[in-house]
Length: 150
Figure 1 (cartoon, rainbow, N blue to C red):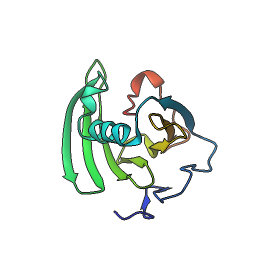
Figure 2: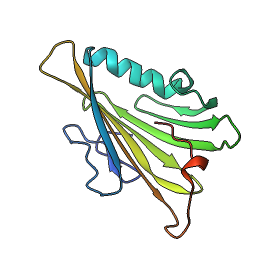
Figure 3: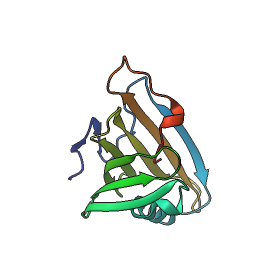
C-alpha cells in the first residue's frame, strides 16, 4: 500500500496529524527516552511478534508480509478468546502505523500508533489512537468479552 492510500477509513499520509476527526476514539501519548529509530524498530517488532508485548496472545499467523504492510491473525488465550485479523500499514517517513480490523464479527475500525521526534535527541513521542465502533449499534458487547491488540 502506498502512502496516502486508505486503510479502512484512516489515511496514512506523510505529514498528517493522524487525527481521525471522529468523536468515538481513545487517545493517549507518552514520551520515550530513546531515538526515533530505536522506537520505530520496536514498533515494527511488535507487529510481527506481538506475543512479546501482550500476555494473552496464544498464536500469531502472518498471512502476508510486504515492504509497507502486513496481514495477520492473532489468537488469544483464556476462557474466552477469539481471532483478530488485522491489516497493518506502516510508513516510517511519517512515523505512522495503522492497524485496521478485518472481518471482525462485532467491531470495525483502526488503531493508530504515531512516533515523532522531539527537540531532545534521545527522546521520542508516542501517540496512540484507538477507534473501534460496534458494527451493530443496537447490540451490547461486554468489555469482558473483548481482547484488544494494541
